[in-house]
Image (cartoon, rainbow, N blue to C red; front, side, top):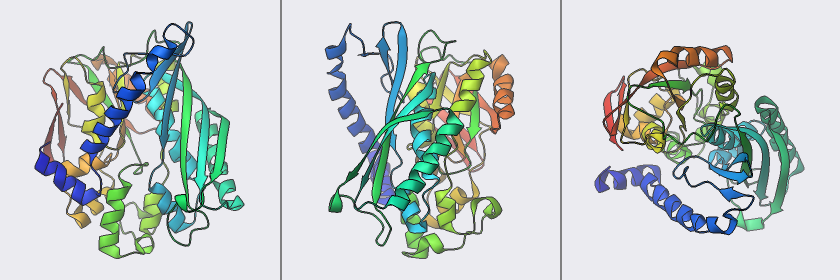
Length: 371
């Protein structure tokens, strides 16, 4: 991506994917310097998942995964709509799906809620939703903290409680795997299976809120939504933007339980398809994706409202594709069928190629991103 394009994207979205990636690399480089403190001891970190979605810690022969994340500015949508019982799905999806793409089955979660002033009813709604999401994904919530921080925490004025919500999850390496999935075994000729995302998940909300505010004003969350899927998504833009994340971890675990080959997987979050998929495309390979799921109608409408090009939209939003799985070409249909049998929408979306770039052949044309 050119510096000019990067600057334009920052102006449009209010943040920079490139700067975020650079800051993450900086933080990880400092964290990596601490690995020596556990070398040869219980809790020794792995060295081969750098750039991935989570990391591995070793306790003798036991390999555990660990990852942390939050739900970002989607919280403001909940504050605007005054509904909090779905955010637990977003919180778990962000960490559970980061674990499962490396082959770790999520098992436990600890969460921290930082608030301005406590509201018992809001906390009860948040935790009820977290309970439901944990039941869906077979996770035990085994730790947490609530911290009251006064004016250090801000948010939508007039909300019952302003807060930030983050979590750390751990998981165990699936018994069918000898080592975590890092992308080291991805080769040209393998197939890519896409899992459909029915919502924005918890990414790209700063850009979405900017577009909606410009189009509808400060009370954009009450503006009518007229997309073709309004009967499912809701009648207002607030409803649409609050739609919960679908947790993919149970489906990917089922693929592994069935003994089907899985060489790599990418959780499509901030940075879109290209920025996330390239994290597991190693050995100089790339991908050609010509059968992705169509963008959600709301995403298409937002792009039109904000004058956002298809290339940029596919960088900031998942565009209807929440996860990509790399498998053997002759097993791709079986992988998609297994996921479908578990209630997910899945389809063979493309293939791995020998050239180091990612090409998306979508309705808006051909989009190409270098790796």
